[in-house]
Structures are given as C-alpha cells and as structure tokens.
Image 1 (cartoon, one colour):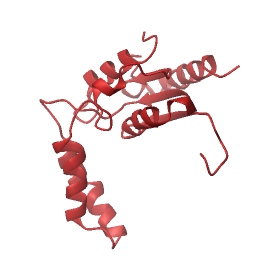
Image 2: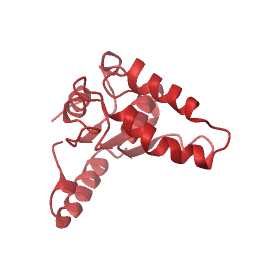
Image 3: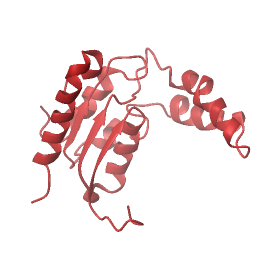
Image 4: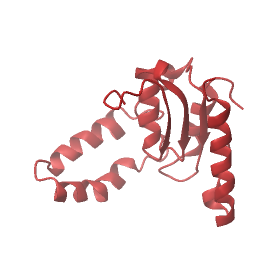
Length: 30
Length: 130
C-alpha cells in the first residue's frame, strides 16, 4: 500500500510490477 | 468492454485513472474483479493545483487539437470537477465509497497533484485494507 518505486532507484520498478502482479493473481477468479 | 464482449475484468489506472476507477467501481462493481490505483490524484483542501495545472497544460493542448472545443468549455469542465465539486477523489464522494466490494491495491504518491491522504483514505475504505 505504501510503495514508492518511482521515487526510488530504477531497479525498484520490477518490485512494483511484481507487487501488482501478485495482488492481481491473488484476486483472480477461480 | 461491452463492445469487446468482456463481462468481468481487472483494471489498472495511474494519476487521473484513479478517479476513473472509483467511478467504474461505483457504477459497475459486479464487473470489476480487482483494481490497482497508482499515484492517484485526489483532493486536499490546503493545496488543490488540479484546476490551474490542467488549464495551463493539457487544456490548451487539447483545444489546439480539437477545433470543436474552446478554453471556455475546458474551464467549465475543470471548474465543475476540481473546484465546485472538489472532494476526496473528485469522481466519487468519500461517503459513497464506504462498503466498496472490490479488492483495490492503492499505490499512493505524495505530490501536490497526487496527495497521500486521499489515497490512503480510499485504500482504507476498500475491503480488507492493509
């Protein structure tokens, strides 16, 4: 919820993408 | 989505995409599986630069591209959205969003146009906030 990859280093962007992907995967309908 | 024949879907939005997503959830919650709101715009009484920024940036650019639009029309739209009815996430009042049934991931920012407080408030109204 409090994640600022755009204010951090470029290397953190994949972390944000992974965070979003994990969230969406967890909420994917069965 | 109707045109594409897609009934239920996930949605991701950045900046002004936040208000679009909240409105979508209000209007068709049964169709949104989950939503991600990244660096959303929001209303903060102490600082609300959305009207001025829009009038100076995308407003004139849009009028240049679209001869059917005028700056007067842009002004009316922006005044209604960002001044007269300014509240919370602009598109949906905070009180209307209580009981939001859709899982939402909010990734807030902290800039004048993307204030932290309304982003956090909206996240706390989503189901199972953490």
